Image 1 (tube, rainbow, N blue to C red):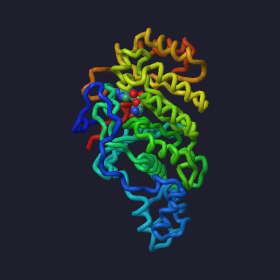
Image 2 (tube, helix red, strand yellow):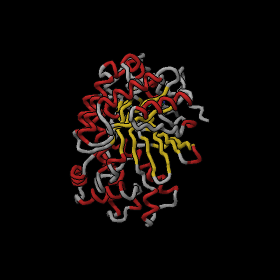
Image 3 (cartoon, rainbow, N blue to C red):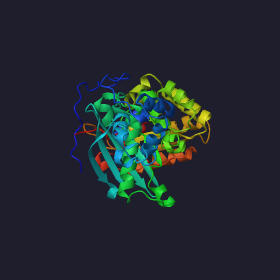
Image 4 (cartoon, protein in one colour):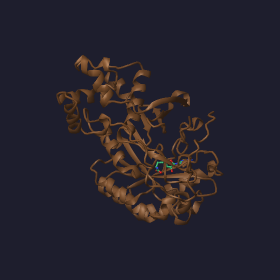
Length: 387
Ligand code: SAH
């Protein structure tokens, strides 16, 4: 359906190369969502206003999802425009929205202040809405089957740039479904209930901004959006020290580990970070995360035909997970989504089925992930942000 081609980058990564430090580019303008409530109060005071104005602004942004000064009637008329342009600058400029799955999946392409592009995907299910957000423009982790990884890292996003993706989508959802409502039941359905850090980027390589965003998502208004930590999933290639750090943040979000192979030889190729932290080290860190937070960890495994889908590889994965305990993990096989220039394709149906059955036989709960948005290049690994 889409005719997108990946954006050419100045420095496409060499196979296996890893990029941790993001190129220095113009910093995103400071935004209310970058700050905690105390810092926001300090900021409005510096601007010459009473500290409580910060809470009012925050409620407009996080609760009402409003950024139009005209609608902020509790603020002095003469100050609204200035407060909004200073504290709520436009961070994401909408480029376009693509729809799939009969309108149940929406991919939004945004342009950032410096021209960098990011994408986010909204998926509506009965009774829940899941938002897949980006933490970086591009990605430095260079996984060869992922379109984002192949485009390289453009830059890190700021906390507010990450949060704003959810706010923009939540606002669109509210308008689309017929405006604000006082009906509790309807209001619940219209809310973004789940956020997964599975868009562009490696969130744990942009640790500070991603954790800031995570806090904004779960802290109640006026600090943030008041989502449940259970509804937030942080996905990582397996940056072991960062997983341990995340476990100690005191916010029990779900951890998803992109494993894709349980043997080091293959994983070195599929997930180049494996040359730093091996399969067992990544799994041990994931287990420690479970121990510390009590949250069941999710193992992502893109099933690639004749590459990582053999029965013995399912057994090896099942054994390694089982050896660490019971009830601490579940596996999410993902049928490989096609990406430009990749020679790989998804496993055959029967092979996928067999892979799942073998894991189940090892006592590992396993559910195949749906491939929402694949025809708009909005599915896992297809986000390459083109103009
Ligand atoms: N950097 C994070 C988020 C990546 S996107 C991470 O690596 O976990 C979320 C998931 O989609 C990851 O597990 C990623 O490996 C997977 N993915 C990437 N490309 C894919 C593709 N072409 N088909 C299926 N899954 C893919």
